[in-house]
Image 1 (cartoon, one colour):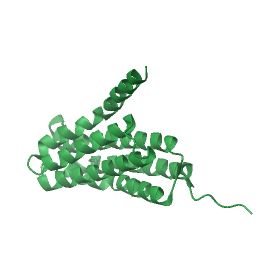
Image 2 (tube, helix red, strand yellow; image 1 turned 30 degrees about the horizontal axis):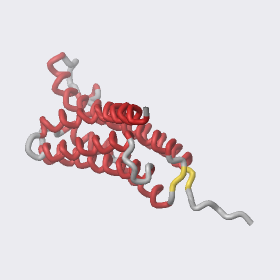
Image 3 (tube, one colour; image 1 turned 180 degrees about the horizontal axis):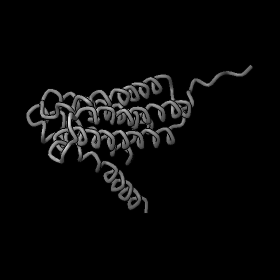
Image 4 (cartoon, one colour; image 1 turned 135 degrees about the horizontal axis):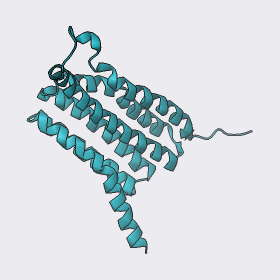
Length: 197
């Protein structure tokens, strides 16, 4: 009689997450203005106001989602099995990715609103916090370079959400700093290698 393992094979979750990230990242472009929005042939002066804020939101969200996708797949490689609670946390993380097109649409349309920018920032902060928690679980509480990169992005997104309450324009520049979190990981790795030599 064989006993079923209490651990879940994360490759099943990986297949689901690829679909979720693919659809969510594609849906980010759904809110861009279409030709039907213009009553006449648009000129340069018509295109910039129509696209500027939404394209900025799209680029920001797409790159952030890409960083989360990369982090998620690295984590699943490092921790190929998980308990039910880890699977549940991963599903919450994926749900936050599913919601990204909605908050991106809101932010792209009303980026100058402090309330909207704070909601968008809070969403990014929650997603980053879930990602960081999952890394901490994967490394069983040890502070590894990948965890430091995830923690850095969480601090940046929380700071950006707080800044958005007073200055929504400044917040987006803070969020762009999260793209440097892989550099934090690389620096931590080099330090670790030097210590081991």
